[in-house]
Image (tube, rainbow, N blue to C red; front, side, top):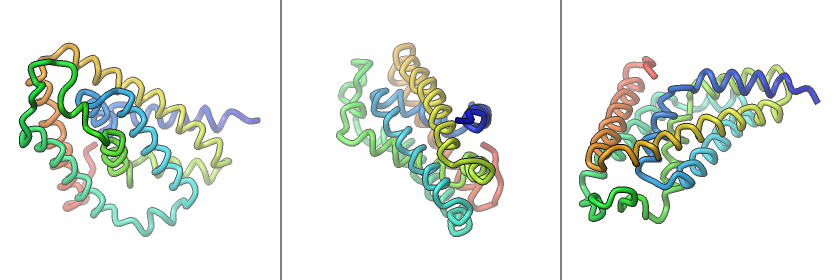
Length: 196
């Protein structure tokens, strides 16, 4: 088996996604949810979005209204930023386990948010291009390995933030980050520009 497509895909995705808005979102999510839930939800989202990109290829992007996706994902981010302030957190002073950590569907929440972030992202374009040049299964293996490393690091960073910062400051920081990413995403969809 030729491992070059796996290695090249791994390195391309690793470099292109390092510090990306999706990684910032995973860091923020892991400061609000259990690390295992964030990791599972994010990995399922990466596999679903990029797996569909590999299977369908350029046809998916041709029919996908990227502007609408950006506006919807931006709105969801703003909701995630505002929502913690609308509900009173009874366990805020207890530190590690907040009310958000005990929600029943954190994997679904993480999956939804990361999926919206990845639709129309540069990773999809890289995935489709690499799959056209080599075997799609090898590209999928490379993508999976890269996102495993990136998501693992982001989740650990978010969990570490949780142990270092007071809950109130962490809540303010993650809310502000979600709102900023949401506004930038909406403006990107409206005015057709890219920042992150």
